[in-house]
Length: 145
Image (cartoon, rainbow, N blue to C red; front, side, top):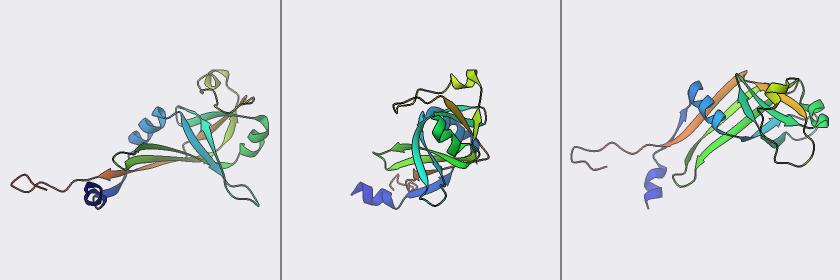
């Protein structure tokens, strides 16, 4: 019964850039997405880290050929399943291969098996986010909703 009442009080709220960055820095796994000519969009989970104004992840040499120069997105979620609320952050930018040993050491190890020794950066050309918030009705003068 409470879920039915709260359902009407859920609203989308745009996140400020600072809030997006906090959520991105807290996350370690996200999904990258890119268009593949003649095929459906490709969406893959990646372990990543934020360094300055870009997201970094490791990939295979073969995948790097597809990713380098591609317009890509990185998306993360911060979900509270009990309150049916949460946030989503989306980064969009043109991916590029980075040859920087110090930055490469910051990226968490990929969960997937196999050698992933190419570092890809997605700059924050566009950084957006939104949250589903639960807003309770104002209290009336008696303290009731």
